[in-house]
Image (tube, rainbow, N blue to C red; front, side, top):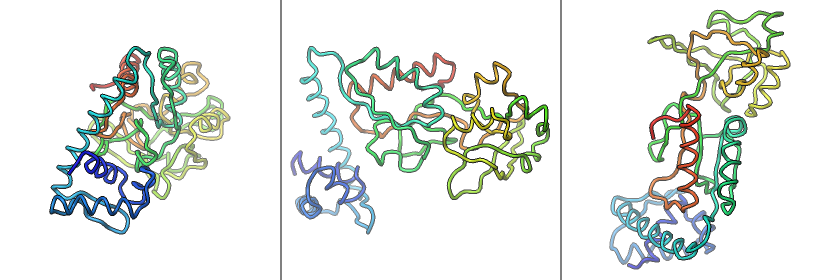
Amino acid sequence: MDVNSLTLLVEILDAGNLSEAARRLKMSRANVSYHLNQLERSVGLQLVRRTTRRVEPTEIGLQLYEHGRAIQNALLAARESVTTLGQSLQGRVRLSVPSGYGQLVMSGWLIEFKRLYPGIVLDVLFENRVEDLMRDEVDIAVRIMSEPPQNLVARDMGSVRYVACASRSFAESRGMPVRLGELRTAPLITAAVVGRQLRVAAYLRDERHEVLLEPTIISENFLFLRQVVLAGLGVGILPDYVVHDDLKRGDVVTTLDEWRLSIFGTNMYMLYMPNRHHTRAAATFIDFILDQARASGRGGVA
């Protein structure tokens, strides 16, 4: 067994299947399979279980994966120390952020980070989907969730408050829902999860209620949803940061303020893979964004 064999095992398990591992390693699938078989033969034990779609580690495979990951991280850290010696901080950070939160809250943070660290390339993807966050080899993802996945490191960036809101003109001409159940019949504007019945969870002190919703306008683009609310086309159920400035100006008003509402979750989390080596650029970025979240009053305990 050598270092190359262990790092190959790490790449296979990180990729999730042999085809993806071959693509990342720029090898043929047959070649990857051959080297994996040779490693298992040298150990004398099965290291991964193969299915038609995925590979999963056996107990001994997981142990070797951890050793391989530690070696790979040490090599990456050593290489980075040599290449950046005497240089300003450089590297690339691949980041996935929610469309609304990323543009309305984080964009200023990202711009300031870039000013401070001009040598770091920021590769920012704006999206809202929560499944398979690392599928695009993203270093860091920011997501709204109630509970983060157990297989990822989750750093708390603060709570998320949803509001039921509408333009002042809509409220004055049409009226606002005053009871939770009235959301069922109101012309709603909100985001939704594809293939899932949309519902809002509502909390009043220790009571929890759920209301099924049938929105009249649905989009993953929260900037568009904000425009629709301002146009007076209905009642939005949106995170408060989407209409924060509009509420301060009085252009938008809220209702059902005694209820704590939630659709996708109640907290914002920064997510990344455990045991993956963080470059100095990525580690610096993580600390900077968490500091910004705390300074804004959003960040929770790390």
